[in-house]
Length: 128
Image 1 (cartoon, rainbow, N blue to C red):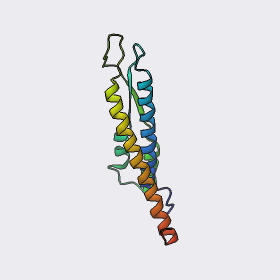
Image 2: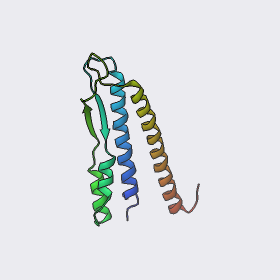
Image 3: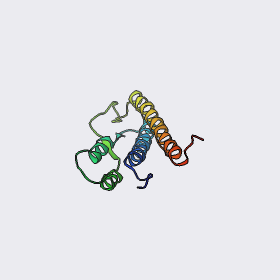
Image 4: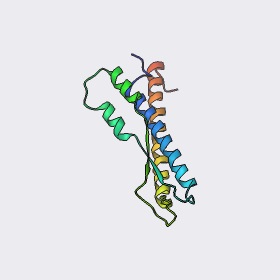
């Protein structure tokens, strides 16, 4: 068994990828707060990850393969317009999303670090 190719490490990697894409979209939204007609971008990937690990009784390799195929989906929110110039970015909401995404990214990064620390301890037999 390859310890580096496991469901937890694949999920954490895809989670970090998705959160990074979301952070980039939020940055784009905030940079275009004054651009007339700009529509807010949103990134989703959590439901895809959930579907990749649920339901099927496949091998671990098949599940890892499905997780690897998950790509963050970026959509433009064309329904909302907050200003007369057609701009659809709510700065307060973007600040909240940026904070939430940053916290989630930090948590996922710490979880990945902990995962590899446990592997190191299991392999070496010590915590050093």
